[in-house]
Image (cartoon, rainbow, N blue to C red; front, side, top):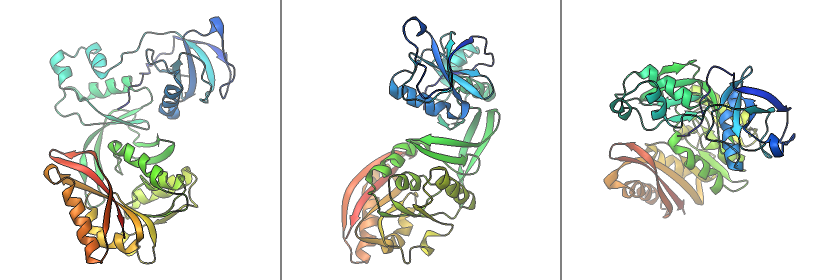
Amino acid sequence: MSDDSPIPDDEEEVSEVLSGESEGAGVLTGESEGELAVVVEKPRAQQAIDALTDEGVYDADRRVRAYGDGGVSIPVTAVPETVDFHEVVRQVGDPRLRTLADHLRERGWTGAEVDRAPSSWAVVGSVILVEIGDAPRPEELGEALLDLHGEADTVLERHGIAGEHREPDVSVLAGEGDTETIHTEHGTRYALDLAKVMFSPGNKEERAGMAEVVSDGETVLDMFAGIGYFTLPMARAGGDVVAVERNPTAFQYLLENARLNDVTDRVQPYRADCRDVVDGVSADRVVMGYYDAYEYLDSALDALKSGGTVHLHEATPEDLVFDRPIDRLEAAASDRGRSVEVLDTRRVKSYSEGVEHVVVDARIR
């Protein structure tokens, strides 16, 4: 969950333009450095906030505000040197409300009602995903989330994942209702429609980690590619990825995202059942990012070179972590006369009560 500033409807407190379109130019010094803000396009607001935070100039005590036609002004303590922006403006305004509870109390919620509000949610591009539980006045809650997160324009209530293609069940809680967005994560851009394909914010570090383990020129088989969750960071890191996805909607986004990230030359996409693709594949690494991936271990090992690495994901009951996925992996390898060296095990997130999403990394010889 991020903690970003709200955008009110009015723009009365945004004033004087201090410098024009820039890539860090037009730096102000001395007395001119007061309550400043930089103007960026609204769709890249979160990306800009993250970059400004990294540079150490994001002013978290003031509000992000609407600016002009489709822009936002983001408060800064100094003109940034590494972040692209259109303008620097002087922005004097009220301190922002820092938490969802602050916004709800401003709307008249009692302490007991605030206690029933969700404690976590996710901002994916311009969309907020939230499970509201038994919180009162859902629409008001949605509006408060929009005020808290100025880069977002739609709030979706999550009801679960269902069906053969693991499609999300969501409903619009507040905002414009546009469920299609582009989400940026560690430099990788994901285009998706959150009403049609799943996206798990809790897997963020796992996605980033795949870019760190792949070597330049490695052949990777991503057996359950989706919209490119793991394919894209691995391809951007230099891997040659055979990406397999059978959900037609997710597959179209996989193609779009390969273009969006300029890795079409490193991604070989197949709309198919992954078991129908492994013949002829000789992979240095196989990614099995699916909770029931163990059912496909035979096909994964058929495609994996001796000495190659498999990343096996599983939803495992707490009392069987990590024994069950390792046992399943060793049994499948033994059936093929192969051996397993476990390289790493980790918990990614809670899947449900008493069940953990875990990953086992192993070298197979």
